[in-house]
Image (cartoon, rainbow, N blue to C red; front, side):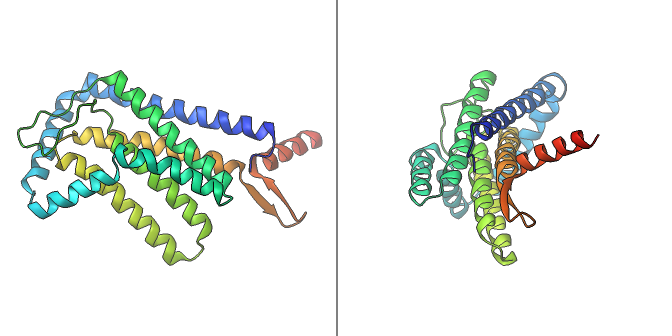
Length: 244
């Protein structure tokens, strides 16, 4: 996909822009929350936490622990590089680059935002587990959105049948929701932490997927050649300038 230095440079610039926009959106939302909506947001957090706790049960608790483990750094830390190595070994080098770009950026955003906001974990007498890192945004939620969005994107590029597209998308959405819900259920995150994780993860993975889509070759039937969308747009702009 990225066969020239120009394409590599454009890909990196697109990713940097995505990182900047994702962080900027989160800072803006956090400032708005702090200055204007803090009492209302805190009251909503407490109401949602209590409502989730009221529906707890032993079977649901076991499911929530399983879901939170799926999205945990303990599991993802070895899985992410192994997935990248597997893709590279099978010849999917562009996909391996996409995977590492998405998950690497998610790590930077999560660590940076947590270190900046220093929000403490909820202090709940019924919390079912303990976490010692900062709370905002939820790292589980960020990685759930990023990891499963990339997997869906890569799968949809290979699968053409509508049935598989719908099945994969619904399965990924269920896992993303379940992982975020598990963090509230277990009492280790405020609902606003999970929502923030979804937002920052969504903005970031959207940037990565757009960069890949924009630079990915598309077939031009007239010339029987492959050309990236970025190159095509550049050629069209030059043609318009030449005509004018």
